[in-house]
Image: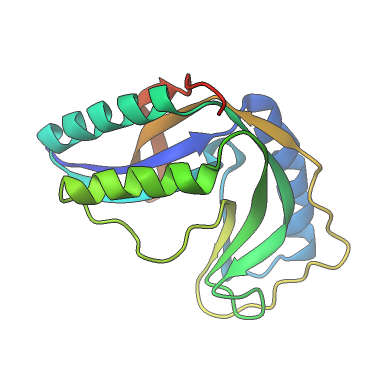
Length: 188
């Protein structure tokens, strides 16, 4: 049976708790019904969305991620500001941007995984990747207000990546870890 899968960096529980308070504040500033906010326990950074995969494909992706994680050292991230895709003026998605604070290049790591996925015939998004957490999805139009909102100064140690499943339910999207891989490579 196929599973809707993606590769992600999950946040530690402490970061999710801090962001739950921030999201509640954002909702107060932006109560627009067009905004569907992400539940704090589902916050993650997506490295690659994979789509619906067969069990054999998931096994191949597992092997690929195990090698990639073994070759990559842990990295640090910090949350920076609120943004939107394609823009904050007309967002389809409202995000919290993140930037790397130390370690090997996370963007290079994401691109390396993407090239390996393409090699095994799993399509990836061709657009440049920007590290971010999805805060809300927009149904229709909205005017998102950032005035008075300050992103919590969270620093996150990224020590693993996960192969995740997303299940679309009437109550919202549910995320489950399929496999986790510790980043154990040496700093160069």
